[in-house]
Length: 340
Length: 241
Image (tube, rainbow over all chains, first blue to last red):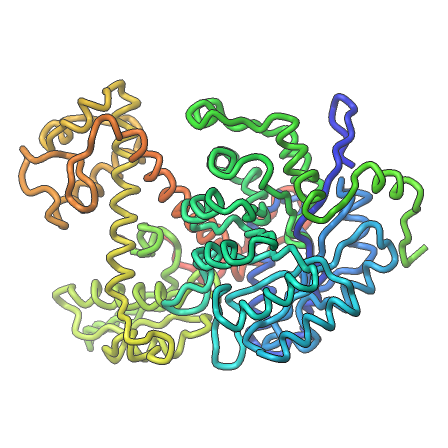
């Protein structure tokens, strides 16, 4: 819960967190090292100085760290844990669904763990989706279209083999498809984080919710255009949030675009923990206003009720969380930390 | 220039070392990008352009560029230094596409961003949209801006306008679209709204690239209120442009 200055409690669903192991012991090769180094650079560069971590803690943090940072020091009520496999870079996966599930099992009312799959695995991908549903009863998945797989350096949501996987997701009731569409990186001249494939997939799979993490930045205009036309496309604010600290006016411009085009019901807060922690992000967000000149031009503003939706109510709707019941549950179940 | 950001690679701090060998009239340039993962097509463009620009200097006979700590560094370096096309170096990923299309796309974005800065500057001075769209180049040339960013962008906008043949003499319209069409006063607000979209995207990249570059390889004294980054081997701003 985030408690406002007026004493009002705000229900917070953190739509995008990781429980990763990027430590040297788990790295398979130089790519694994460079991947976690790149995350650390995001962390170092966009966090306020007093929020920075030692590199070794950042590479591998404990279950207790997660609980403390999100729910004791931080205002989260529920966190959605994403899975990122990167099996070409890490021996046991980067953020593995089994490891996250066992972390979450101690405080099950706090976490929703999503799975992941790679459509390029063909039949094996379909088997893996069935396995994820059966073993972990997942409600969602995280897709990473720029992941390497053998010779392939990326894929698209509207590839035929991806469609087979989404058909199965639909059939099994795996409804929330989080898609990483973020800063331009690999591969080559085919841009695997191009957002246009979302348009096709969202049109063809109306039952599924497509949560575009990082709002497609640096392709915000294309993303807004798609999300405006498709009722089942949502904006995830992971990586966008920390700009509230480093470049608040710029953050205001992004929020104004999102509110104007997509609307207050389709924007989801995410801290991207452990790159950033939710305490300072939520605190700053609650106290943030879009600068007047930008707000009046677009005719939008981050009012308290809009912020409440973004911070928790929108995600609660997607994940069938009854906020009243959940708040009661959370009050009744004490935190379970490993080291007493 | 970084083609994606429309900012000089020297300003971005990408250039690490420049070795000049007087005897052989040769130059060796090492550069480094914000991350190991920066898109290889952009990296290739930058490596290519650095080599081409330095090669234009009259006394230079041989230029060699080296991109370090990049996931495709070796292939980019040998390709650029041996004058092999991107589409051959990365043939298996390109389907015969060359980098020309992406180069033009970046130029268009740069044009829009530079132009937006000038248009907003004029509107801030109190000009109405009719006066702005009717403005000729000589009138624009005579206008002075207080904001240094706008002054620079005006200069850069004008140079792109001329080099692309979008204006040829001082009586030509100062503002046209990338396709060379006149702007419409009634649609200026919509046009600027689209320009803003382009700028928001470029600023995102620029902010990340600068930030990530600034912390890559720098040791941070974590936990202190004001960590002092230890300068490593960069020659930031040491190369004139």
